[in-house]
Image (cartoon, rainbow over all chains, first blue to last red; front, side, top):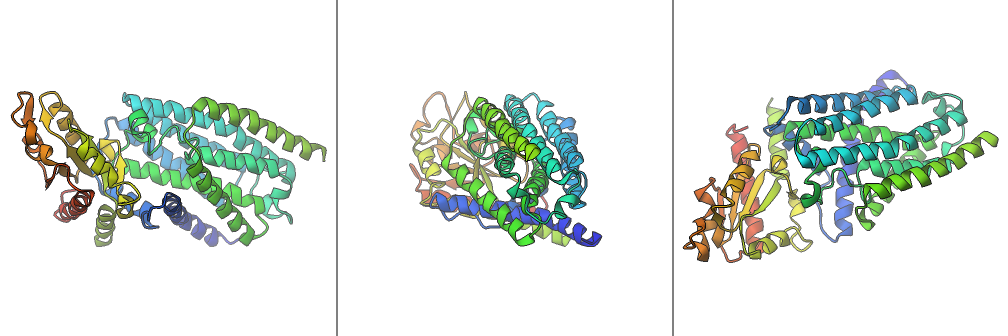
Length: 281
Length: 150
C-alpha cells in the first residue's frame, strides 16, 4: 500500500468510527422500539462539547485528557503504518492508564470509583489482547502487521478461539453491557458517569475522540483476522460489531468480580487451548 | 472560522443534554418528565440524553418547590453546569411554589434562587408540553451561542 493511501485511511478512520457509533445508537433505539437519534449524532455531540465551557477542577485532568488523546492517536497511526503489534499495544496501554490517572487526580468519589473500575477493566482485557498478539506471532513468525497481509489464508482459520477472546476484550473496551461498569450512561445514582464524571466541556470531547481512536485499533485488530480479502475483513468487522450491539441490549450490568473471573478463567483457558494447538499442529 | 462556528451551532442545536433535578416535588412532574424519554415520546430522536452529571448538561430541568434545605443544592448544581445553559422550571410548584407557597419552610419558585429561562405550567404538565419546552430551550441555546456567550 502506498504511503499517502495509508495516511488517507488513517484520517478517514475517526469518521468511520463516528458513523458506526451512530448506527449503534440507531439500532439500539430500534431494538427498544424507539426512533432514535440521527446517524451523525456522535459528531453533533462532539462538536457541541468542543464549544462548551470547560469546568475542570484540576489541571492534571486536562493534562491527562491530552496524553490519552496523544496515546490513542499514536496507536491508531502506528496501526495504519503496519508497525509492530507489541509496540502498538504498549502505546495504547499508556493512553488508557492516563485516563484513569486523570480520574484519580480529583477527589470526587464518583470519579474515584469509576477510575478503580476502569483499572479492573484494563486488568481484565490486557492479558487477552497479549494472548491474541502472541497467537498472531505463532502463525506469522513476526510481530509486524505487514507480515499478516502476506498470508494467503485468513488468520481466523488458525485462531478461532483467540478471535472469540478478542470479541470479549472488545466488549470490555467498548464499555458495553454486561461490562459497562466504569462509565455507564444509565447508572446515575451509582457512579454518575464513572471515569468521565469530572471531564467536562472540551476535555470530555477530547476523551471521547481518544476513545474513537482506541476503537480504530481494536476494530483494526478484528479486521486482521481476514486480512487477505478487504471485502471479507469489512464484513467481519461489521458482523462482530452487530453482535456486540445485540449482546449490549440483551444483558444487564454485572459486577467487576464476574468480569475478572470470566475474562481470566474462560479467556485464558481458551487462549491456551488455541496456542497449544498452534504450537503442536 | 465561520465553518467552525457553524459546526458548533449544529452541535448545540442537535445535542441538548438534560439534567433533571427533583427539587422537592411530589413526583408527579418527575413521572411526566421521565415519560418524555420513553419510547412513546422518545426525546432521544432530538439528541436529548438524560445525564446525571451537571458538568455534562446543557439544559437544567427543575421540578418542585424550593425550600430552605435544598436551595444550596439547587444553586450548586446551577453553578456546576458549563455555559451555554438553559434553565427550565416544570410544574406549578417550580413556577411559584404552588399549593405549598404558604408553608413556613418553602421559599417559593425556582426563580427565587436561580434565573429561569422557560416556564412550563401545569400540575403536572403534559409530556407534550415538557417536550415543547425542551425544544424551545434548544432555540434559546442556539441564540446564546450566536450572541457569543461561549
